[in-house]
Image (cartoon, rainbow, N blue to C red):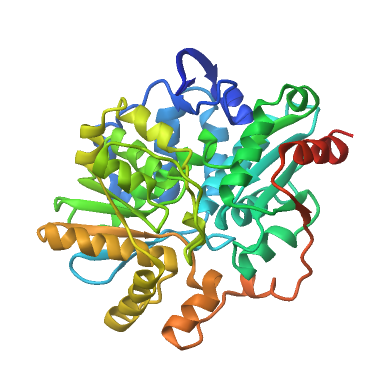
Length: 435
């Protein structure tokens, strides 16, 4: 498997290099040189495949002979060991529950797969690998859980102070061991900018082995495509036109869906559902992309004002706006409407949805009003208990907290507070990691 940078399609690297570098030196993002269409037989037998078998088929076709099949099968089996059930609300709307992993968020799929893949490649290395990850909420918890106590790998998580939920913060700051949290006095965009600057800094590159666990890393993106196939497998009638509605922040989740479609999955249409941070819906409507500072919302994992994976979306569509807008619709909803969405789903279907899923529900509902002959799947990206204060307030009732999250409530937070200044971040890395 060879990969190129979205900023330079003439220079290629192998999978191991792309995974460990995370970000190319030209500040682009890695993309596969070839995206193979899965054979017809795969789709004919899809109903009979386990989730792990689906993942292995997708991986082996993308990776080629990069990893021996026996090793790849072991990696996939260990990483994708929890379900992604499809829950039917009515004849038109279903929910794909992606919160059954260790951190109760969809990012467990990518984080666990990446941890296993990096661990596999890192066995031949002597020098410790440092993973830098920016989080707007869920990524950090998934990465912390996925890489916890992985030999030869240290994880540094940057998160925006006061802009993640209490239980999300506990997932980032209570594990210890090889997991270190930095509480940044700024936004997610500030955290993401610090990580990107670190990758492009020659001094840090010379003294540290750095990689990323954000969706800018191709090893996070590829496994997120698995559950689109798994969702399609569970549809009662695959011949009906199906729309996937994706609550979106950094747009890795939607980009993974585009990758699945490129591999042959017959997805009819995508919906990019955002909160007030609506730069991509704005682009889809106008053809103009205007990055801007993110604004805080009650669906904080989507509080991204300059989504990195938009570069991959442009690459997949050869920067052609007309083609992209014909295959992706974009809608945004403010906090008041999001609260109404949480309440409506509960009252209408007796289903508790989180604030991110509620944005997706509203977007799909809007789209289906225009296209009533279609059906849709909303990606429910996190368990509602991760946003318990807001959800309980809206529903005026208690909701259950899974034990693996509840046990964190009384643990002591450990994080280093830091201004969003690169020199401060660089100095901390050199003093605490390189020394």
